[in-house]
Image 1 (cartoon, rainbow, N blue to C red):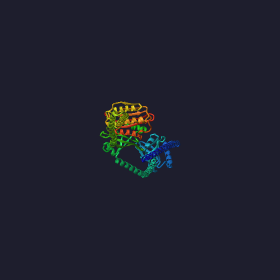
Image 2 (image 1 turned 90 degrees about the horizontal axis):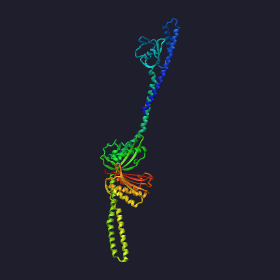
Image 3 (image 1 turned 90 degrees about the vertical axis):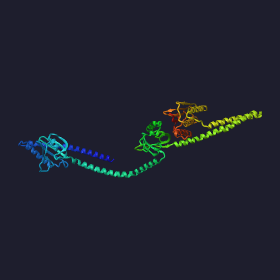
Image 4 (image 1 turned 30 degrees about the vertical axis):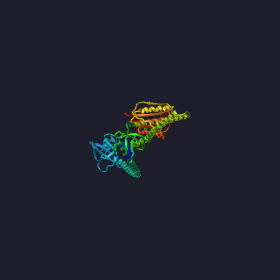
Length: 530
C-alpha cells in the first residue's frame, strides 16, 4: 500500500515536471527567435545609417545597443540569460552574456569542446531547443538561433537545476507527508488489528488443540484433492508417518473403485453445487498405507473464506463398531434358530406322538366315539403342520456365497407365488461373493427391499438384477410405484436404516433413488472375488 502511494506521487510529480519542461522549451524558443529577429532588424537599420559604409562599425554599434538594452533586462528566473557569440577560427568568443559580471573579460571556449553545445549549434546555422552544457559546463535547457547578418549565434538558456528545484522540493514534501501518513496509518492498523490477530491466534490454537487431541481423524484438502492438513489421529488411522500425507492426493486413502469416481464427484459438485456426501455423513470403505481396507464413517464440510476454499473431513473408524453390530445381529438370529429347533424337536414331536395315539384310538373306538376321535386326529395333524411352518419361519435361511444366486431365485419365486405383482429377476453375470456373511446380508437387503416394494410402493412391476458395475458387484431392486420426494438417505424408516446398516457391515455402498414419477430404486455396490 505504501509503495503504491509513493508510486502514484512520483508519477504525478514526473508528469508535472515534464509539462513544465515543455512549457519552458516553448517559451525559450519563442523568446530567442523574437530576440534574434529584433537584433537582425537593428543591424539592418545600423547598416543603412552608417555614413562611412563600414560593416564592422555598424555591427559594433548594433552590439552596443543590444548590450545596453540587456543591462535593463531582469531575465527569467535566477539563472536564465541570453548569450551572443561569434566563431573565431577554433574558438567561440562570447560578446554578450546577460549575467556576466561587468568589467570582466568574457571567456573563449574551444569550438570542438564539450561545453557550449547550444552556441556551437547556433554558430553552425541550426535553430532549435536542446538540453546540454553551457559555457560554464552547467546543464541547461537552451534555445539557439543563428544571426547570419552579424555572423553571430544567440542562445537563451536556463539551468536545469532551477527548473527541477520546485519539483524536487515538492517530491521531498510529498515523500515526507507519505511517510508520516504511513506511520500514522500503521500505528492505527496495528492498534486495530492486534486484537483481531490475537483472536485469530486463539482460534487457530483452539483448532490445533482440538485436532491434535481428537480421537477422530481430521483431514483438510483443497478443491483439487490435495491434502493440506492431517491430524495425528488420521495419520495413525491410515498408517502414515507424521507429515507424510501433506501434499498427497486424497485418492491414496481410497480403494481403487472409489478413487476412480472421486474426480467426477468433485467436479460435479464444484460446477453445480449439488452435494451427494458434502454437508452430511456416510459410511464408506477406506484404504490404509499397507493396502488393507476398513470401514469408516465420513462427514464432509465445505469451508469457504475470502482467500481459500477447503473441504474438511472427519473420519471415524467403524471396524470395532461393525464387529459389535454383527454380534448383536447374530443374537436374535441364534435365538430364533433355537426356538424354531425346540418347536420342531420338542412340541412338534409331542404333537406327532399324540396324533399317532389319536389314530390308534380311532381304530378301536366305537361308533359314538369314532366321530370325536376323527376330529381329534385331524386337529392334531393341523397343529403339527402349523408348528412345523412356524419352526421353518423362525429358523433363518442359511445362505452361503456359492448359493447366493439360487437363494435369490427361490426368494423371487416365493414372492411371485404369494403376490399378484410381476417380479423379474436378471442375473447378468455369475459373480462370486466374497464370503458367506456378505451373501447373507445381500440376501436380507434384497428381501427387505422386495417386501417394501410390495407393501408400500403400489407398483405394477418389480425388477431385481445382479451384475457387475466396473469391478464391483451391484444388487439392484427397482419398482415403478409411487416413490417419494426428498433425500431418501435421510429417511427415518426402520427398513431403510436396516438395509443401510447391513451394507455397511460388509463394506458395501448403499444407494437409493426415489421420485414420485419414476418409483424407487435400491442399489448395493459390494466387493467381489476377482
